[in-house]
Structure formats: structure tokens, C-alpha cells
Image (cartoon, rainbow, N blue to C red; front, top):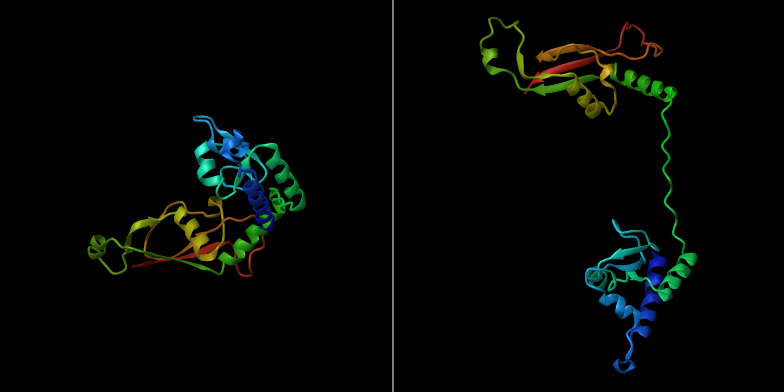
Length: 219
């Protein structure tokens, strides 16, 4: 920020001094010429600060004359690409060199990392209970022959629903292959949905397989 402010103050002093030409001189200052622009032809300007979708500070870009004259120039966001201003920008950037953005390197996930994720997910889910609140099929509910008949729900709970709710309720990411659900759950009640994790992950004491407790209740 100090770099930008210092650069703009310096530019203001140069511009104020250089463009105060008398009409009798008969000459057009390069700055005024650049501001005027040529219709249908873009101008080359040097950015004094980074502008989204345009460029970074110090870069030379082409812009429409009107955009430079009405927006960039009054705010000193850019200056004409002439030697006087190019030299000033270069010197200012030498003194106040902005910190370069840290390059983000994509590190490939190793099998060991994947196994740790599976183990963390398995230990968290084995003690959890996934809850759903759904609407019931009122017509079939009233037509039940006995109270022991299952209460059907309007929208069956699918594997995708389980994956989304596991992420939302427990902040755990699992893959579709980790959930064994041959058919959607279509009634109210409590269910044990089998989970599939690598055999190298030890099961908790007393468990013979990984499962997820799912409870579906009516609204």
C-alpha cells in the first residue's frame, strides 16, 4: 500500500508539472495526446496497481481511450506507456518490490494418506447415528392393515442422500464405494447400513463389520 501511495504522489507531481503547458507553445504533451486517444484504437498503458481482469502492477496493457481517460487516469491506476512514466514505475518497483504470491503446489495424495482418511472416517462413523426427517405417504399410512406394517416415506433415502448427510452432519468425506446399499430405504425406522473400508483398518472390539446407524423419522 505504501508503494502504491508513494508512486501515485510522485506521478501527481510529475503530471501537475508537465501538463501545465501554455497554449502558445503549439505543442501537445504526450500525456494529453495519450489521454485523447484515437477512435477505435486501444492505448498502451502501464498499470500502477493490480486490477482484476486487466493485469498486475507494472504490466503494460491495452485499454480503450475512454476507459483510460475517465477511469484509470483520474485515479492514477495507470499511466501512458511513455519512457518518462515507464522509468518512474520501474524505479518505484525496485524500491518497493511487492511480495510475490506464493506458488501453490499440488501434492498428490499418497496411499498412506488415503488409509489415514479411511481410518478416521470409519472410527467416527461407527459411533455415529445418521438422522433423516422425511414426509410419509399419508394414503398408505391410513390404509395399513396393522400397526406393525412399515410406514412408507414419500421420497426414498438413496446412497447419494447418505453420502451428502454424512458430509453435512459429521464433516466426513466418504466415497460411494464405501457404502453398501443395494436398494433405497423406503420406510421409517432404524437401519444398519454396511460400510466397506480396507481390511487393513482394524475393527473396534466386538464388531465383525463396519456399519452406519441410520434413523429415519417422519416430519
